[in-house]
Image (cartoon, rainbow, N blue to C red; front, side, top):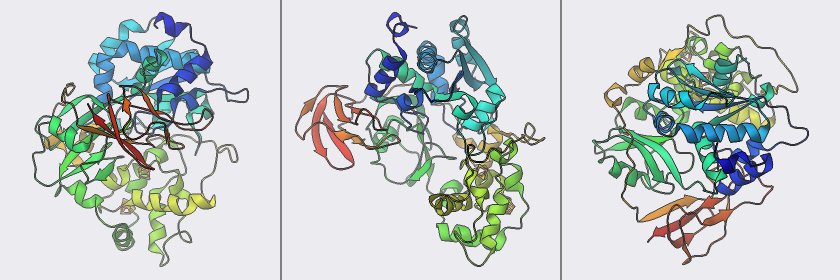
Length: 457
Ligand code: SF4
Ligand code: SF4
């Protein structure tokens, strides 16, 4: 750790994390300072796990970050351990990340941090899987890593925590741009650049009609608008031709997905047999959720609670179902209908149900290579080497809510000039949220309820 960082108290670490706007960079966006803050009644945390498991097909941003910035990730992990009083740190990453393992090796003796090599399967990055694989502990149904004495943080969040300890705010994002582009790459880009700019930096799209999977094809979101900005949670963009099977399936209207499921689900239960949450022992059986479609009434009266523990990993819909049905989407609908009524999801504190991994847990892992092949992504599974674009975007679009919690409130005015790293929107000290900083020097061009637009200069 840097000399300055070693002298920081737990409260200084969380304060610096909050002031720098550090949030979950793997996609979650949960403010890191809130995860690290301890109150007298907080559960004890003995282990902090750095999540470098990165399992979304074609995304490699964590692998590159770990290979090239290992020291800063270790420093961030040590800071997180110090903040919560944990004596044990674990770096969870895949055995295939040889460069990252070599980079971490010499840095770990004497730190209390162990490196845990994971297999190359999906979804290793899911917190329930990662905690079980690295510690042997099972997070209770609907629980959190905290329930088993752990905190999990993405490696980029920890990198950002180390930067925050030196007063540097989060103003850039490590992303992978892959798929139907001429020159896939992985690199740092300023937050607020739009997808069109990203694709330009990747040499342009190789197909005329494309769609964008922001955050990955399994758990990301399909978008068609190239003016959408990169935020603090954007792990990458997979560009796919508009007629790709994945795009076509994702665009099936929800009502049609349910209608098809109703007529075609034969209750084979393959979706359940490969569900990672079911294999960990949780009470989640997507084939039983599909049964809800078989009744004449759809919705809250016929859904059952089995879907409410779904992490939406997509394996059932995109790999397991031989009929190309949509069990994930049925679980999503069940969650949307049942959770607001407080139905279905049993919290660990109310109903502690001991769970036991399925005897076939190990042998039913889904290899990433097989998943890539099944998804029709093999032609796009090419290297996306580290390369930071040097072009300067004309403007940055900065959503006020790129984190969990309340949106940040602008503290600049239209026409105001700001320096790179200047605070442009903030949240109250006690509110859950994260402040926002200028990714580059520029002039505030517009402000509305949802975003700040900054023109670069
Ligand atoms: S795998 Fe498909 S057909 Fe089989 S039970 Fe699940 S949704 Fe139904
Ligand atoms: S998306 Fe499907 S496979 Fe994944 S957790 Fe939910 S039910 Fe299980």
